[in-house]
Length: 256
Image (cartoon, rainbow, N blue to C red):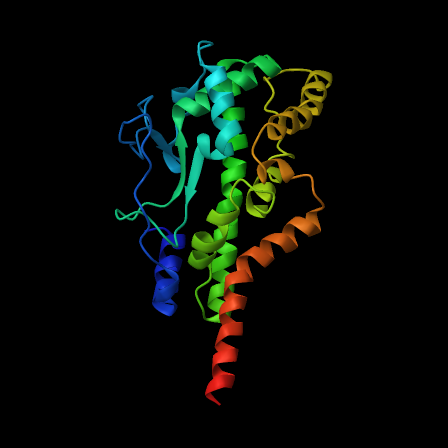
């Protein structure tokens, strides 16, 4: 058991109401996904065991299918995060990747930057991971606030707010997750000149901005002022809890 897993167990002991069991892993193209299959090119790859060579693009990936998928549901078409607040019935949580989608994205990156397949795969994977890791960091921050306030917050936010605002301009969590991708460095080929690296690096942000512009609302709103996005996410996170407190105070006044 890792140090973080032990911390989760301690948190469960302090505030068991903050944790529940969520649903199972989603299905992909009618097939049951597999969470840890680094040697396979099917299903899902878990963050801790992903093997970059399994997602190298071959040049034959269906880019149109990829573009249609991300246009409809954003990064969730490529990967998704399962919170430790609500793991699967099997106890699984973390970042999971649809490897065929990562290969498709890697092909988009390869064509854009003229990278070798393994370089494109690593770059695509790092972009997606940066997005999904924001969700993890938010998950950890939520637990911190729960332990300080001594009340469950995250699962109520996820069920009553996030699912309601998903793919709308009010989904500040996805906007901030996209923003987390923008400063990623381009992985250059070894022994390339500083001019080559700088030229390619300068193209990374416009490439991501062009990609984000095709995503649903929320995802495409990453460019709003940072303080507006952060305060919006804070408001979303605390919204249901504040309403509950208001109702409690009103009910207490009536009883008095």
